[in-house]
Length: 188
Image (cartoon, rainbow, N blue to C red):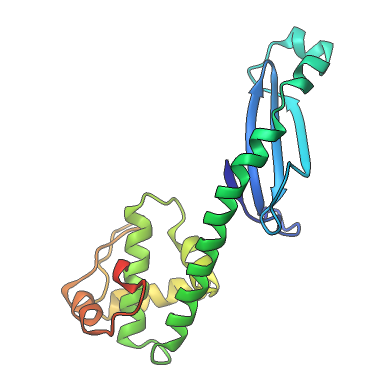
């Protein structure tokens, strides 16, 4: 089960829950929108697996394959995933509100929090930490890159040549410790 977001090819966003099954030579993808997620899938996509048996693929999709698609299990699993996703979305909105409440411009507090979020994303092994920041803050990636550059120049974040990364400096940690701790900000 995975939460899907808008495709990167520019088509409209498709935020939803997706599950991929392998049945014989076929890859079956079940999908349902995230909001209003209840019941079975709204889309079922069946396509040949890359490593599928060519003879089975040549015979086409059989009723045996169709009977093995368990939409009831998808519907049962979807509730817990949708609740977690909705809670996550609420957390992101709360984070955006807290960032907006920080002093305007590139304040020390803002740069320290942004640096901490960036380091957390990198440490979690995320491939595109700047994309995570864009989702979390609602700010464009180009702007965030400039903010991270300013954070490094002002001594909040160390530099790693040629790749994403860095560590919080003592200066950033002091600023974070001096900030009023709000609900949920302990995790930053």
